[in-house]
Length: 335
Image (cartoon, rainbow, N blue to C red):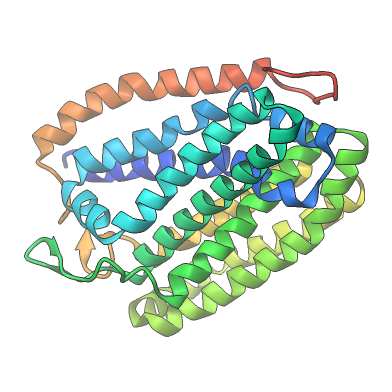
């Protein structure tokens, strides 16, 4: 039995996407949380928690996109065609957020408010666009003769737009628990107070998506609610409830690290639920990873490079977070 390179590359893409969601999620979340904190010193502290590492987080997005292009060119072509508008808006949001991130430190006091608003705008737009893209992929794309056969505005539908809102809530929660871990005193307390309403709103969004998806797609309903699948997949929603309960308890007792770790677990469980719903399709409802795969020779050639570069990315990511570990104080800055 030979090695299935398509499964290996699908695993790499899933891992890269999850790493991006986790790492860029909390720094986008900080921008989303800016409207909830008007204090200039605390806003600087919020940004300084990610200033040394934020620009490296998007490496995973680049890796995932490049891997999709090389290993599954059909999927890349369909997604790029179907989601050209939200993906372009996402990229502009990321660029705008990045420019605002740097310029706000250099701006005069009179101009600081403009760059703060730009930081908020870029963070919300980029996050919302990512959620819309995920919702549109879950909805599926019509493909005829290996070509996208839908409209450029198919993503402009209630379900993808709702998923966009859900991801904004998820990143905001991730950002709040990151700040709980990285700060003390007043800012720590403010973020602790924000976690319960954010968590409840996120759980409501997850519940709506979990009901909406099987009602709209018979194949997904069959995947989740037929036996014995129901028993195999039941731990996913059960663990979501358990993690949410643990997160509320951790915030109540003023824990520092546990809220962030439990939020990561919630993100992972949501990602797992998405994977269960669409597997083995990479373009729902009918294009599997094998249908979309490039020739084995191409995948094998790419894998050599991937096995070299991924450990390097993991090492510098670990080292950068290790060097800048610990709490942030108001007098610390990286610009």
